[in-house]
Length: 127
Image (cartoon, rainbow, N blue to C red; front, side, top):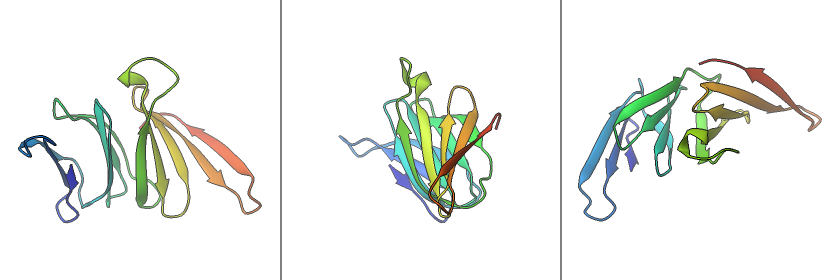
């Protein structure tokens, strides 16, 4: 898997044969981070957006629009249910804000650490 910084595309290659599998284009600018599971791929773009893909089919599942600042890391984690539709995306932005996105519900929660170290959670629905 390769995310290109200059063109905003993710290229997937077979780890066995090194042949191209998919080319996923969904960002206006380059790719800052990528994460892969057995079913989903998430890309964090320099355009401050997160895009979740069904990488086997090559289709976009959801685009979580512009965040407040650039994402510097993403990870796909299993949810509390069964199957890939319960996977969630965890992202962290350059200003230290952590967000947890539900792929199947198209929603997210934000965890922001306050100056005194006490976290506060703000819930937001929708894309």
